[in-house]
Image (cartoon, rainbow, N blue to C red; front, top):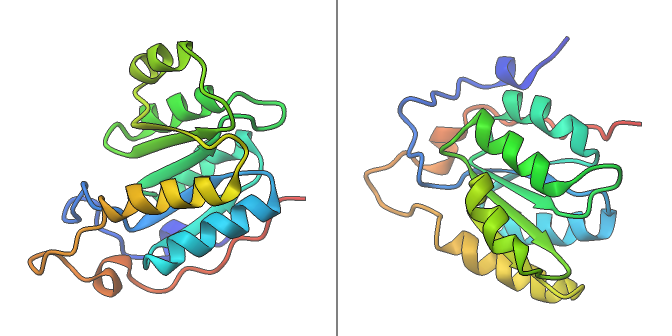
Length: 164
């Protein structure tokens, strides 16, 4: 069976852990994923998706994303719990949740679970895209002393087929 670990010679010891190169999007809606993928790939990032929250942890173990974007309202799951599993799996990984509404308890949950960003977008997809684009631009490493994106990512990774 083919795995992402076999597809690349990604050396986690030498890459810049503060930079973002690989993004995993945990999103069940095709139109939201397509919009986010457009913003992220335009920024030069490698983007993959899981559309079921219970698959995120295993996929992230193989793909080794620097950033995980999670819809806080995934069906049959809680985005906050998915975020906690992503942080526990890799404490240095950036984990962002996005949701239509901000609630007062989210500030406490963010700190307790180690979530790096919580993005409220009020159901406006354009607003979500702008918020993500702005935050990603702040985390892309453009210094010349780091590996280029082509050098760091290794061989191209195949697009992942969505689970049935």
